[in-house]
Length: 113
Length: 112
Image (cartoon, rainbow over all chains, first blue to last red):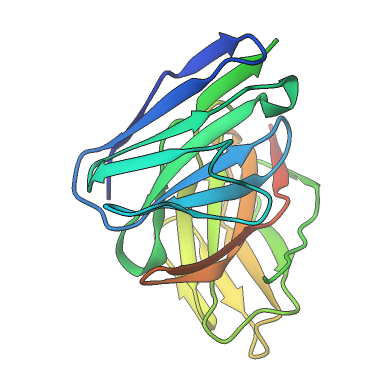
C-alpha cells in the first residue's frame, strides 16, 4: 500500500486566481493520476502525471487550465488556473500499487467564489 | 471506454448480505474490474479487484460472469459503518496506457 498526503486539504479562492495542489507519496511510484470529483458526482480522470515528461490529459482537460508537474517519483502538483465557480470540486491524486490497485489521497476541496 | 451503470442507491439492515451490481456491456479484453468504497470527505478506498469468475478477500466477494458484461460486489453481514458510496471501475493500466472509467456510484445506507 501507499500513504498519500495532499495540501491544502481545502481552500476558498476568488475567480480568476490559481491554486496549486500538492500530492506527496511515502514511496516511489511509477503511475500517478489526478482526478476531479464534483459535488455529489463520481470521479473523472483529469490526467496522468508522468515523471520527467509532460502530463497526459484526458478529453476535456487541457494543460493551460490544469498544468501538472511531476519532478520525481514521490511528488506531483496540479494547478487549477484562472478559476471559475465551475471549478469548485474535490481534486484527488492517486497512485497505482500492484495489479492496478489505486490508492487515493484524501482530496483537496476547492471552492471558487 | 467501457461505460458502467450502477444503481443510484440501496438500503439494507445490519447483518444482511448486500449485493451491488455494475453493468459494463462494452468491457474490453484488457479491462479489470475494481470496486472502491468512499466515505464523505475521504478519497476512495480499494475493496476488491477481478478479471473473471469469483474473487474473495477478507471484506468482500466479487462475482463476474463468463461474458464479463456485469459484476456483483457482495458484502457479507453489513454493519452501520459500511454506509458509503461504492464505485465500480473498469479499465486497465499498462505502461503509459490507461483507460479508467468510474461508475456513477451506489449510495449504500445500512439501517439499524
